[in-house]
Length: 124
Image (tube, rainbow, N blue to C red; front, side, top):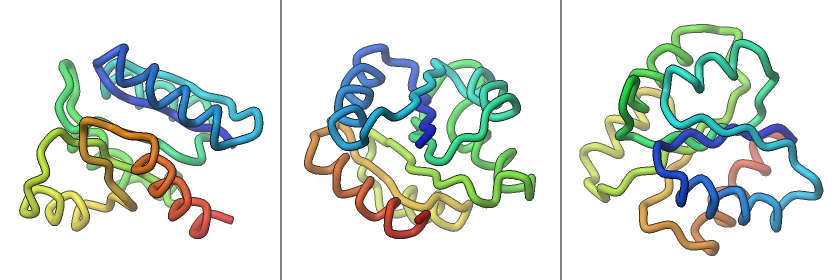
């Protein structure tokens, strides 16, 4: 399993990485601190799941989402969007843009595992 964590917060990336290591047996985890770096990782690696923050410098999550969902080579990529805003309108907009799941910050392990359980049912 190859997973890309995209968040400008080193703390959030650390929390996600710890949870992913508990959930998966020896996952290969990539990290990017902004959307531009995430796109570069995606161009060079076969990623199965991407956990993508909404608000980041350089390139935000919705912009990355737009790039990915307009490129058929990423059709199999499962995208979990992480947001600090639990606004239903924003989440519905992101669903329409092509996210597969979402997490609301502050992150907790139960919520992360629930999102991963849903992802694994769909990508296996």
